[in-house]
Image (cartoon, rainbow, N blue to C red; front, top):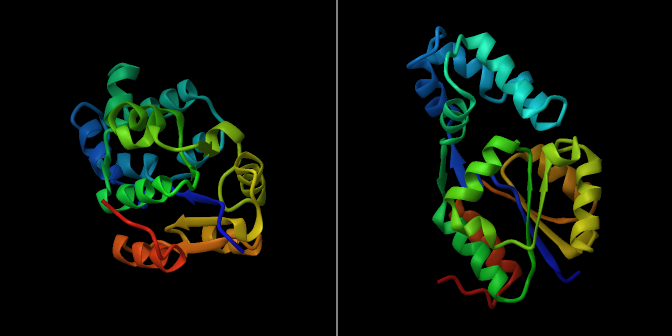
Amino acid sequence: MKVKAVVFDLGKVLVDFDYGIAARKLALTSKASAEEIRTVIDQSPLLFSYESAQMTTQQFFDEVRVRIGFPGSFAEFAFAFADIFTEIPEMTRLQKGLRSTGLPTFVLSNTNEIAIGHVRRNFPFFANFDGYIFSFEHAVLKPHARIYEITEQQTGCRNGEILFLDDKPENVEAAAKRDWQTICHCSPEESIRAAQATFPNLKLS
C-alpha cells in the first residue's frame, strides 16, 4: 500500500535528549544531588503522570520543587528542565526530504508542555510539520491504542498508508498491529536506508 503520511517520534529520533543535563543544572541550587534529581525527572512515574496529563505543569513543578528542594522560580526550573535537546541533523534532513516530495509529515510524541515549548522556540525545523500529536494534549501515552487512533484521525490515513518511525520497539509493535508501515529507529543511517528503500526517488540535501 502506498504511503500517504510519515509520522515521526520526537525524542531520540529527531532530537536527542539527556535528562542528566537538567539534573546537573538543578543540582547547583537544589538540596538533592544530581543523581537523586534524575530519579525524580528522568522517565519516572512522576514524568509519566505529567506527560499523560494526570497533572498540570504547575502541579508538576510544585511536586518536583518539593522533592528536590529547588528554591528557584518556575522560569528557572523550566529552562533547566527543558534545555536538554540537540537536533539530529540527519533525521531532520530526512523529514525535509520526505516533505519536499509532497508527503505530509507529523510528530507523534510522548512529551510535555515545558519540553514542547522549548523545542518550538529553539528548533526551527519543528515548525515544518503538517500536524502534531502530543501525549499531554490527549491524556494518553504510546503504546496505548488510543493515541494511534488519534493519529489516524489527524493524518486522515490508516493501515499501510502511514509510515511510522520510533526508537522504542513497543511503540513500533503497537503501530504494526494497526498495519502501519514501520521503521524501528536505531541510527540515522539505518533509518535513512529504510526510508530510501520505501521511497527510491527520495533525495536528501
